[in-house]
Length: 249
Image 1 (tube, rainbow, N blue to C red):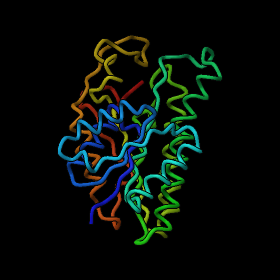
Image 2: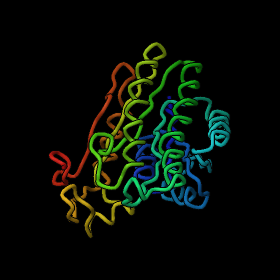
Image 3: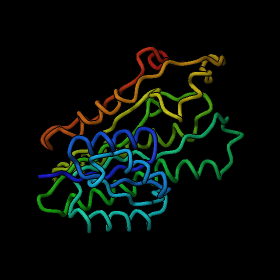
């Protein structure tokens, strides 16, 4: 039976790469992002698998958008077997006293509220569909464990994602809903181009950092996605071997 996945943040970076990986692996995939043109570019990149891609423009920070998106996906595919809860925003280096309430709310709105809205709707769908169950993979971050300087909003939201993961995994046991988290560090993408030029370190310096190829993230993600529901990777970290994480600070 063909499995159905929803991937948020599917118009670029990690979300796009993992969505294309699922399509190549034989899944039907709902591609979620704010911009219809960018989502269409992901569909076009799927090549021979594009017939199994379904683009649904959605702002995950808006609960009403998420509600409509899940209704559209279920109407088209009938169920949801996997949610990759990936959409997120990164805030430039900002000290706590310099961060505006508007910037804070932007980070919380997408990184935390958006992930909760999607997780909540996926959980209810998986709980009530027949056969019951499914898998939710939350995109955390190495910042869910150790912060970078000047990253209070991003770090706070990613710490919160770890709480969502643990609580939802516990609550999902009775319904065959497996919830896990992938924490990713320094993958080569548009978002991490600045790593090559240099980023703030805990000792006050600015230094370049190593990055890994996107394929390492996709392979790790697919390993989680392919597991039977009787097994779960609760937390896993995939990172550039030479990046400063262990011993950060």
